Amino acid sequence: MTTYTPAPGAAPLGRMLRAQTALETKLLLRNGEQLLLTVVIPSVLLVLFSAVDIVTTTGPGKRVDFLAPGLLALAVMSTAFTGQAIATGFERRYGVLKRLGASPLPRWALMTAKTGSVLVTEVLQVVLLTAIAFALGWSPQGNPLAVLLLLVAGTAAFSGLGLLMAGTLKAEATLAAANLVFILLLLAGGVIVPLSKFPSAVRPVLEALPISALSDGLRAVLQQGAAMPWGDLGILAVWAVVGLAAAARFFRWE
Amino acid sequence: MPDHAPAVEIRGLTKRYGAKTAVDGLDLTVARGSLTAVLGPNGAGKTTTIETCEGYRRPDAGTVRVLGLDPVAQASQLRPRIGVMLQSGGVYPGARAMEMLRHTATLHADPLDVDELAERLGLGSCGRTVYRRLSGGQQQRLALAMAVVGRPELVFLDEPTAGLDPQARRATWDLVRDLRRDGVSIVLTTHHMDEAEQLADDVAIVDGGKVIAQGSPEQLCRGGAANTLRFQGRSGLDLGALLKALPDGSSAAELTPGSYLIEGPVDPQLLATVTSWCAQAGVLPENLSVERRTLEDVFLELTGRDLRA
Image (cartoon, rainbow over all chains, first blue to last red; front, top):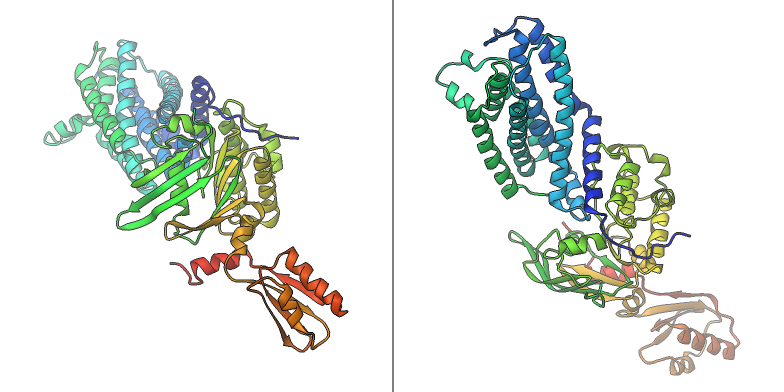
């Protein structure tokens, strides 16, 4: 016969972190809408715009050499910002964050696990997009370390903004706003359309957006072979600090 | 370690939301190993009180200690020792039932056997169903399983049987009884009087943010208005001798010829007095019935019969 005699206690921290990260990643990869956003859209855009001359690209090399860095930036934004904001917004709405708040898992460990699942997803996205880009004849330049640094800084910047949105707005508002921002930044953030095509009056504003800094920085390294795009990294670092600080300050768990 | 401390000790708890006072100087003590039912109309302050114990709310005034710990300041020590069932939600909409239960178990050092627990609560057949496709009753039972899987010392169950069918309700009651048998302290809120009567060692009736009555179900039902005993027999029996034998404050009357009503503190002793008087009079009492107040009567007397907003 089962006995329910109390034997309480938290699992070791490492086990909790691994389990939480694995669960968050599984749920993310199982979600159809999320996959559309993080996998299908960047892949389709990469293939479509590389193959068809809809938008005039800039810089040296083939069309794919311009587009691949932009779509890597889009992939980071789709997972760290849009996907994370929508998922976390609904977790908040359905009391998941509240219930986990009463479990032995510390809150910082929950956020660490979320970051872990974002990073795992991004690795899968980068592998997929890189494979597609190579198939399209991509010839990347530059220092892989600089690329890694840009991706990490971009993830931090977008995570801060995504969690800020998820932790302060209603779930439905987050869903709508996160998708709207995704489309606007896709069009006006240098992902597919070069920023040089925009009027010079708005260009300084667009260049300060995190998506522009990430796509411009990745392009500087991968297309033009630049060493380390400090300017773009600086912009991303500022967004990361401001976004994460605001999220930490204003995030509501219920 | 303050391990001799009560499971829950609340003194003068006050919690306001804007201009509204949800909890207004509430006192409540829950003994270790006991099952306390918190009863009250909607908006009485039950959930706010429970959620303050769980560390979700900070008291505006008063003190709350759970297992001797401050639920906010000592949350990291307290959380592994308690089990929490929220009134609704708490599960990823896309997570499968067993996946979530297994995950919750993984967060604890020495959890229960997950499959056995799921089987017991009738979750075996829907283990692979994602949470948002479970029925309301299945969602409730999953939340209950998640609250107890970590072998807590103390569980808080906020309306654990709301919306359950009779079988599921019975399964929940059986599990709650077994938890109590094995020494788990339990605090549950409910709207079901029979649930409180069946399960609770102690009932706290909450209204207007205060505990307005507390005691065992028997104590609560005994107080206040009298209980009654009815029987039928030959008409015209001499009630004078009976009244002398009955305790003070009792009354006896022949309502209609041959139909008798005794009012007073109805207990086994009183019943024996009445039947021995009948025996002496050579009367066989027919349709003898004892009517005690139910907890529902007590509850409605205390909280009024008006519908709450």
